[in-house]
Length: 88
Image (cartoon, rainbow, N blue to C red; front, side):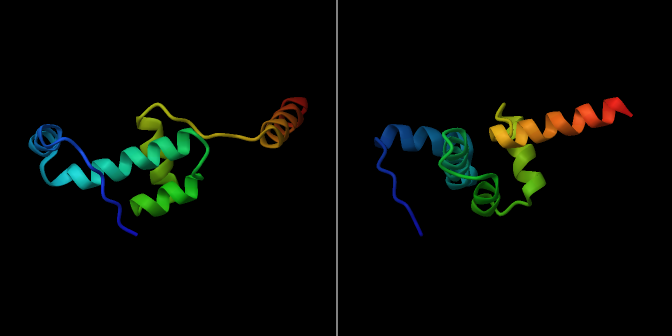
C-alpha cells in the first residue's frame, strides 16, 4: 500500500532539505512509532513496516524512548519466574 500525505509546500521543502532521500523513510518510521506507542501496531508489525528483525525493531523503538508494551499476564509471569529464581 502506498500513502499520500498532503503537506504545505514550505514544510515539504523544509523536510526534504533536512532529510533528503531519507524523507519517505522518516515518514514511515514516524507512523510506525506512533502506531506502536498507541497500541495500534505490534512489535512484529513495526518490524515488518521497517523491514527489520524483531530485535532491530525493538532497538529502533528503544532509541526513541519507547519500550516494549507488556500485558498484565506477561508481567505476572515474569514476576513469578523472578520469585522462583530468587528462591533457589
